[in-house]
Length: 354
Image 1: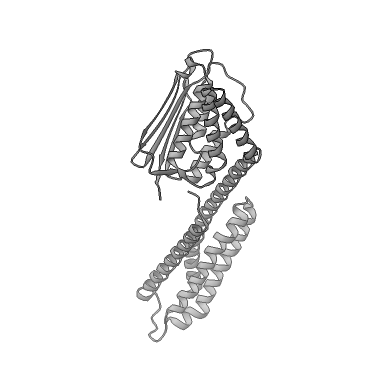
Image 2: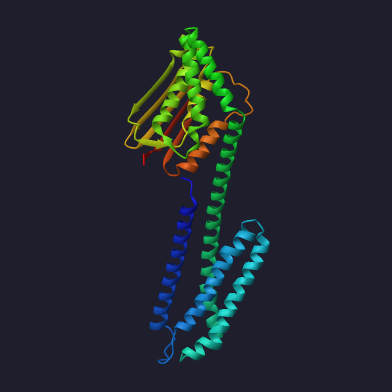
């Protein structure tokens, strides 16, 4: 599913809440440990100051590395520079925290004097853990950011391609021509041609006007597929048309789906499954049950390898990208191209009509 601006704000807000909870919990744990086990025993003093200073150094190390060094150096593969700057940051935090402990924290808030060497070893241990956690967090955060940018780029590319295709057609000229052809066929009592023109007009109208929404009624999508399969059958000889098996089962009237999501798989069947040299079979099955759609297509493959066309595979690639963008964790796509046939099985979790 594509994240809208409001959804991104909620995610960012939730992320900040998680960070606040984690640091608050860590501070509470350190306070409890220092208060019960540590050297802070001065009755009139407070241990909040030392803990706050230490927490400030931890926060600086964690976010300085995760949000600064990792995205600007490590993720851009400037590893040597990253190591140098990470070590400088690490050393500055360790020394700074130790100096503050020695000059202020222990002298003002503790009745016991901790040796400088013991204190710096303690800070090295704790800061090493913080640096390791920040590196893991920074890399994970950058990976998700990179995935989001790739998804946005893919969506922009698909939108651009669709707009480009639509720009190549003058809709008014097209529909006027189709209406003229339909009227001419009807006048000549050529009902077959009239039916073809009417179906073609419906397909073009759906692509140009009704597919601009994020979702459409699944009923309209099924009707588009019905007309497409019918036109494919009509262009074939009766013998070839009889080998096309097409069925739709279930109740699809109460669901919505992303427009033109299923058709690339069906187009692919007719594009590669019509083999004139032998008796080949094509099957398309759509089943809807319990808010789940299952599309299965199967076609025989040609025994002779044909040279790849310039745009071969683009439709299936775009369909995969749209599924990842629009239905993350809500679909499964299985493609079997190992034998003498090409088999696709798409399972999709549907959304009810609002």
